[in-house]
Image 1: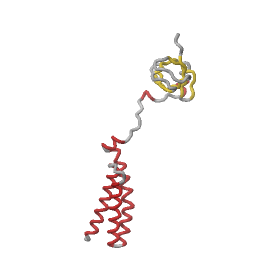
Image 2: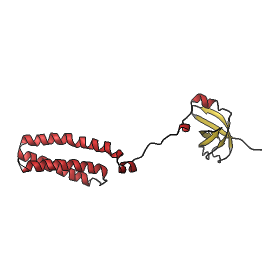
Image 3: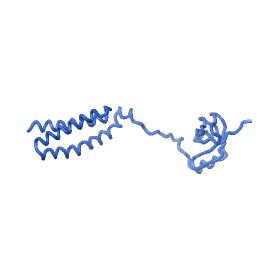
Image 4: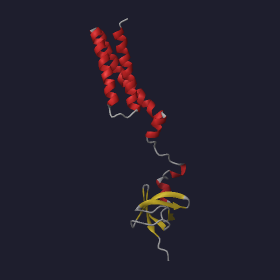
Length: 164
């Protein structure tokens, strides 16, 4: 067996390892440059051996690099480092779901308490049900009483109740 071919295969494996490393280690592209150098070196050795071996090496590289990248990107979010650096979608709690429009229309005229300041959007509590509301007048402080004056789809418009 020709040791140059063994070295070319080693360079292809080194390229695959470096491609995976590039996914997991931020290097600004330096690891990718090394991977490309290994790939070109391996292909050059294959072509030096024979044209047929060279083209087989090129075809293997065309299949290998995307496959390794896909596998690495599929593995990344499952690693400890991947879990630490990727964003997870917000988890909605069961009570946070937006009620149907019909249920919201029933709240027309209902009185509630402002939980977070309305600037003009914020959260209000209507008998234990927390809903996002829009203030008619702009800013409303936390703790004020409000009344639902308009319902349009999933948007509740509220007005401050003047305390006397």
